[in-house]
Structures are given as structure tokens and as C-alpha cells.
Image (tube, rainbow, N blue to C red; front, top):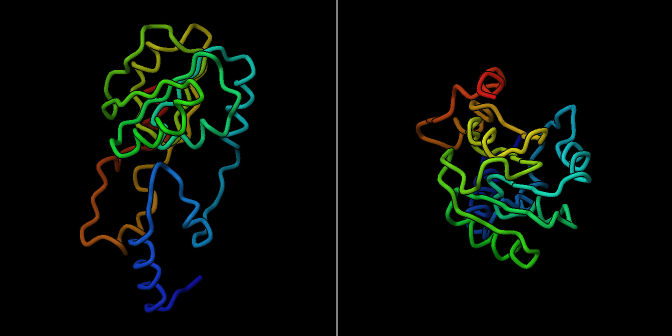
Length: 178
């Protein structure tokens, strides 16, 4: 799809004036095309979910995905590193009995060793030693990651100077760390 420059500028102005909270991109979903992976993150999580007594959703955003998995295990927590998302996640998840903790990006997690049967992480930072520490023996870690140079062309259009702090984040690097 090719946009004329005046339509592009109009879309940018509309986006700047749209309220954004959490990790809900519904507003732009009708305006973008994206490929889907050959696997389904949600289904992978649901396949492990049935046998889960304790769950952590790491970097939950506004808690939208975790909220969609109800009913949740009795012992369910979410962490979020981006400060504006924390109150959004708490408002959505606390009524379900989910503890929501603000954590530093890629920092220590505020849980004891062997705390969780399942840790899920959709596009969040990963600290492999921390994931290993908090997972129970036989537990599962399910993540969906995006490469560090994802959407480089879009960023080149929208930014004066493109900087990617995680430009070396690749599948090979994730596998090596895990």
C-alpha cells in the first residue's frame, strides 16, 4: 500500500492525538500490515496453561494478554518495566487477584527461587539467569521476541537519527543466552 504524502501526514497527526495506554495497538491495527509467525504464541501458552499452578507474565504491558487468559491460576503475577504501563496493568489485573510489580528492565525479579511453573514473555527483555532462577524444575518459559533491527525501514522514515539499543538481539543471541 502506498500513501500519498498528505495522507501520511494526516495519519501521523491523528496518531499523535490518540490516547495510548498499556500495550493495546487496536487503534492502528486497521492501518498496518504485518506477517504472522508460523507458530501461535497464544496457543503455545494455552497448551501449557492447563497444568499451571503458578504463572508470571513478564513485561506485561497493560496486562491485556494475561487478562485474555482467564481464568488464571491462583498464583499469578505480572511484571512491567515501563512506568506508565504499571497503573494500567494494575487496574486491569488486580481485580483478578494478579500481583503486579514494577521491575527494572532486564533487572532482578522480585520472586524467590523456583516460584513459577510457567513464565511468559511477549517482546520483553530477557535475563536468562533470572528466568532460570525463578522457574520450578520442569517449568516452562515461553517467549515471543522481535529482532533488534525489526522495522528498520519504518524507523528510518519516522526518526531523524535511527538508534537501536538492541541491534544485536537476534534469534542466535537469544538461544545462546538461554
